Length: 246
Image (cartoon, rainbow, N blue to C red; front, side, top):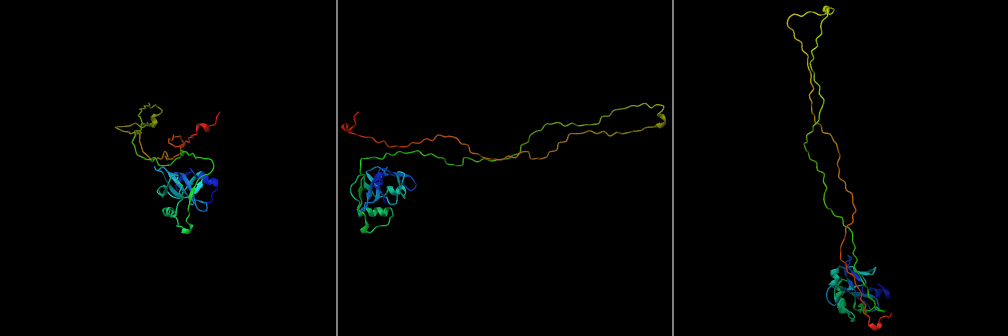
């Protein structure tokens, strides 16, 4: 990995992430091989103590002010460590367990680097970082809607017009002119008239009256999200005589 002097200086203090994007710590120091190429970095983790875990730089991805390693957080945090702020170069005896820990191919003795701490040049500077709260949504089932049909009995009251026959007695006198057409009766006699009446009849039939279905639609609403983030504050301690006047 060939980096410019400016890129090497910018590594100090950058966030170090594992392969899933989780933060491991930040870059404490950068080591270069005999050819001057940066090969390893030490990572300042949140684990208490004055030691920094070592991580290979040539397998890392540098993007947008952070260093992403192709390892999980536990692998990096349990890697062989160096003391914070050390100026001692890393010898072969220190590199061998590093290659073994990260399962990197071992190098021959002739190619073993002897890195030394690479310090940024120029005015002292410090990278200030802060956490950002990234919010999103996750879709998950919250219940099941069902259609259930059951039978209930209810009383229906209505009315229907009905008809029936009523008997009316009509008496017509027989005139002298009609007597020739009427034969006089003798003895007993009987005549019948069939009478009819209507009665209400209820017949039940089953007919479809409504189609019922379930549909769903999305409704957007705003919900508050609360979280805590940390940010770094850089404090400047300047002697009184070196402070600007006016």
